[in-house]
Image (cartoon, rainbow, N blue to C red; front, top):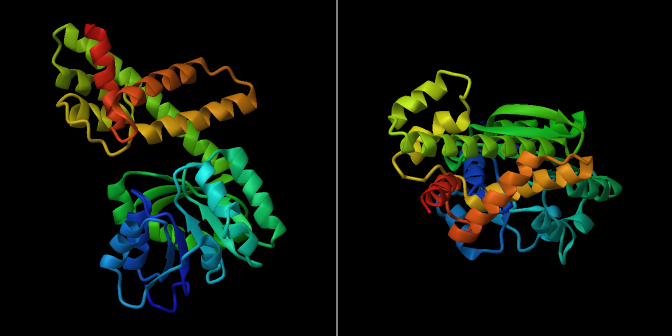
Length: 302
C-alpha cells in the first residue's frame, strides 16, 4: 500500500490479545497509527517492531479523538467501551464532525445503539464491526469481520477493514453485527458442548475417537467444533484452541441479553450459560474454551 493510499492516521484503542496483532497488521500494511492503551507493556509491545514514523501514542481517548477521523476500539466488553467513550477524558465529548468509531470487540447490541446515538449527536458515527477468527488470523489479516451501519460509514471504514480481514459481511443497522456475532458464538458453544458430550460417551463405549471424528465430519453431525477442535485439541488433551473461557462466557451472556430483549426463553442457551459459568468457576477465565470437555468428562466419572 502506498503512503498516499493510506489514511494519514488511524486511531486504535485496546492492545490486548486480539487488538495488538490487529494493530501490528495495520502497521505492516502501511497505515499510520495513533494508539491508546493504559498498559505500558502493551504500548511497548506495539512499538517494538513498528515502522519508523508510523506509530504515535495518545495519553487519553479524548486526546486520540482530537488527532484522527477514524478510531478502532478493540476492548473486552461493553462496560469498558462505555468507560472509554463516556468516562473522564473519554472519546464522545471529543468527537469531531465526520469522525467514525468502529467498535470491533464483542459488545451488547443495545449498548452499541446507545453509544451510536451519542456519537450521532456530535456529528460523528459509531458502527459495530466485531471479528471472528483466532490470534493467528489477526496477525495474518484474514479475520472475518461483520459490520453494522450505513453506506457512508462503511465507505469510510472499508479500506481499513480489508487490511485486517479477508471476508467483510455487512449485517444491517448499527448493533446488528454485535448481535449476529453473539448468536454465532452461542451456536458454536452449543456445537462444542454436543461434540464434547458425544466424545465422552464414545470413549466409554470403547470406540475409536479418531474414527468417530471422521464419521461426524462426513455426516450430519459436522460442525466447526468437530472439524477444528476434536482431533486437534480435545482428543489429545491439548486444550489450546486459542479462545478463552472468559470470552466464551461473555459472548453467551450477550446472547442471554438478546434472549431477554426478544422475550425468547432459549433453554439450550440457558444450559450453555450454566455449564460455562461452572467451567469458568473451576478453571478461571484464561483457560481455553475447549476445556469444557475436561469439566464434562470429570463429571461423567464422579
